[in-house]
Length: 413
Ligand code: ATP
Ligand code: MG
View 1 (cartoon, rainbow, N blue to C red):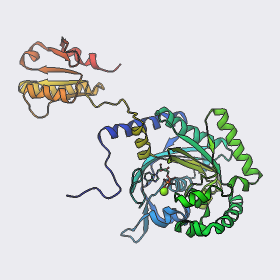
View 2 (view 1 turned 135 degrees about the vertical axis):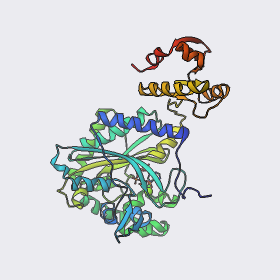
View 3 (view 1 turned 45 degrees about the horizontal axis):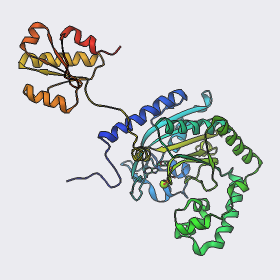
View 4 (view 1 turned 90 degrees about the vertical axis):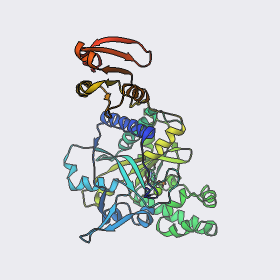
């Protein structure tokens, strides 16, 4: 038997309904936020991620699915979609459009990770990327969308953590301060943190190793290394969030794993698990050869959100049950049932009929199993009289109805 590859999963049944519910909410919300949907390629030139995501990151160092195609090109299954979206922005000259440009995507990403609960080799993200405004209002626009999405889905116990890692100048200054601090604690750091000390010391701040965690409690705060402008930007964001009534926690330990962030970084966290992670990336577009353009984005792990909603017993009210099952008796009844089912469906009604030439008894059993709300059986008499008994499966009530009126009765207004 061939099984699904390690770290992948099949989504179906009740869980699929939850996905559908989430995607419906996303589309409704992005509509009122004026955000346009994009579909970018699932694979890109490897170079895009080396440059865009950054070669000191876990993603680039360990997690990419990279392969050579038959033409000898090095391609990589996208591990995230911000780089691809930024490439699209530059390639299509989106800066010529009225700004800001607000985009969103829903789709799979691929990372060679150690699979565990909430961590897969293929995972789905909903993400937004907003370009073209340098003030904190752009962050607020993205954050409020994320907040509203989680709220409207009924998710509870989610906390918004915000931080600023400053511009590259502030960051370099902070790197030195942090390195000096970490060098003193070297002996008690985990192997990974010792390795990243030179390349990417910021990552030590959110290391999950207990010993590192303890040490980081007394680490110098990045907020103390911010210059005046970066500080004003951060204060500006806090003001807007306060005015919008969106609660937040200032948290200097939030750093995010990707190299492209500048200034604001944020996460929506439930019980230690990050559901949404994002931030500002003012240097990204110029990395890809575009004119310097500010941007803000976030990625939300759909599997993680589904797990959270399920754990909180939140279930969408979506049903696959047909509104009516058209049963049949005899060859003419079979054909008429197909016709009527087609006509009802064209009128927007979920109707089902028998496709297996079952007995009437077996058809009724089936209608019951698929939880049809109404049933009707078309036999010789019904066809002659052009009317039949419509049965409400819940109450058992029956009424005689003309077949001509059936569509009008069920059709959506
Ligand atoms: P983590 O610290 O959990 O590894 P990350 O920093 O790698 O997260 P991002 O690259 O910012 O995460 O991705 C955004 C969101 O996508 C995460 O907050 C999470 O919800 C989800 N996500 C990331 N990697 C995975 C994965 N391997 N499986 C499932 N969801 C994931
Ligand atoms: Mg990761």
